[in-house]
Length: 239
Image 1 (tube, rainbow, N blue to C red):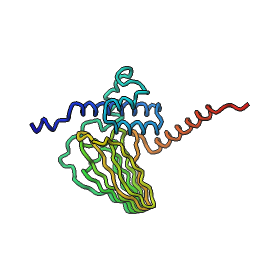
Image 2 (image 1 turned 45 degrees about the vertical axis):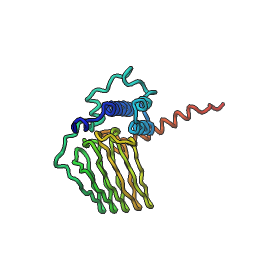
Image 3 (image 1 turned 120 degrees about the horizontal axis):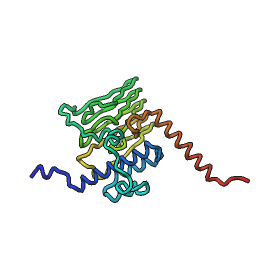
């Protein structure tokens, strides 16, 4: 009986699968320059917050029906866009808590690094970069606590990872990202970020696997130019 109760309801499984299909589709269009950064991020947020299949369908309704006219994305392509779709191996040696401290220097975590249940990040006149794009997080909550004093921190997440964020900024900046359903799925990973900055900065950014900060900036600059060109073409021509 306990095993049966632990199994997710079929409706929850369908919702989780459809959410991943929608995010796959949005990421594919974004990688193909069919969606601008702002629109892509807005639609991904809506997909994470959706609580029904109907709400998920609306996120991509104007793009094309996922099942009717668009063939499913091959598994290889889906894993390329979302490495986290690979089932996480249960790490019995996963630490409960770890520290990442940058004092007048920097710390960086990227690739398939081992993420503890709770990570405390402290930046004192230094910087920290945490990249979760190639990490297969286990189901449940992974907690990140960030404290920046005269320093800065950036957390890079893939489109498919649900994020909760809450923080305080004093004479600094704290760019929040909240894209998780009100009732999180216990069988899916959730990154919960909180903390405070004092004359420092903190940001959570979404990037595709393998996309560098320079590539992301170039993409945004290109999209701004294309938007400006479209706006100029819509202006009435002078005589």
